[in-house]
Image 1 (tube, rainbow, N blue to C red):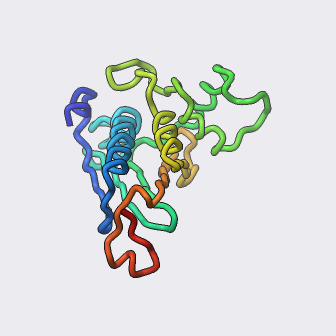
Image 2 (tube, rainbow, N blue to C red; image 1 turned 90 degrees about the horizontal axis):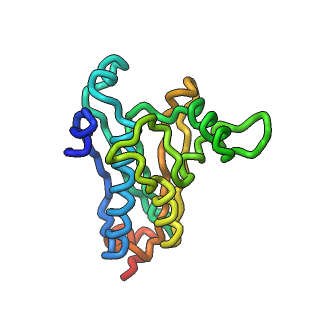
Image 3 (cartoon, helix red, strand yellow; image 1 turned 30 degrees about the horizontal axis):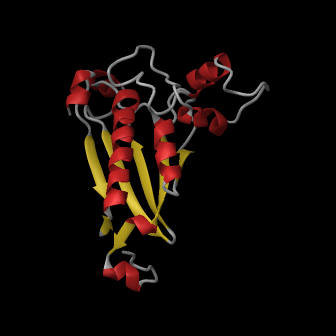
Length: 192
């Protein structure tokens, strides 16, 4: 809440659907680290200020939604916010200027979007206490990979290349979770 207020934004609504999934200590610590970075990213880069949201015909408060599903051998975590989305035009310009995109004429929207996982890259014009720390979505990818997981960015639709909605899909090994007995009976093994 204080981070949002420091940026002149209303604290977002956070919805979590976990469906009887209990994380072991290591999994809970990892999820805490992931959420810290993802929430910071949503509040700083995605969710707009209340007046901007109202002009865009959105509720004053942003919404962050996260849900989990089990799919052997992984726990899948889905994360999205209802913020401004990715500005692919700006990302492409930054990527070209910094030499992060290989020399060619055309880049897919997905290639451009993947730049958000590059260390030190930001689309923010001004550096604040929240942005510009040099630890961003590259840290999320590193944390997941260190624990046998991964993250992908899925573009939802590309009607306006300056406001592209997206969802993060992450996976973690089920060895980091305890599963409810009903899930174990349905062909999924409880670990522990």
